[in-house]
Image (cartoon, rainbow, N blue to C red; front, side):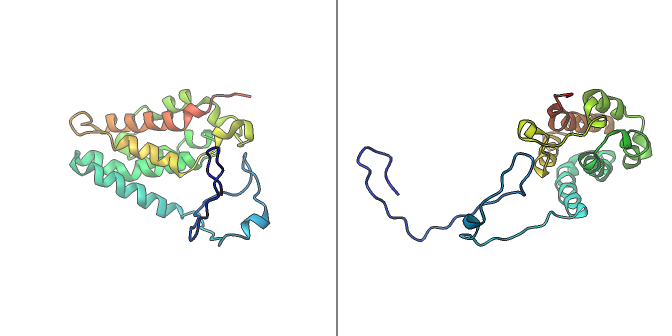
Length: 186
């Protein structure tokens, strides 16, 4: 290896390790040459089960909402499950009937969540959104779920006293993180 200066002094680097991560090819990601991969120790990590992911986000939000009203604390499992279902849904039309509402307790079904999601995400339910090199922003991953949870963790009990307000924050976070990417109807 050489210095970046004009002298081009040779530098020896010893006892160094690399740690890298990659996803499978497709959606704008390229194949990695097998000869290059042979220089590494490769470990395959499977995606965590849905219940594991739900447990992680439920724990985070339950820890945050401990100081909130009990009605808001009761919403956490339903909001985590609804977030997961919407995240996994190919089409929101399948969720717009009774699918999403089954995750929200009966007491809170009058919250105007679905119409606002449908207005903000019109393309979500009508077209397939395959990730391509020109539309890499259609790749959704756990980082997006983390952003939704992080937004909910910014709430405080002084301002969000009712379940309706907390669900509105959740709806807003979902729209900002997921739906704002759906910018192209082509």
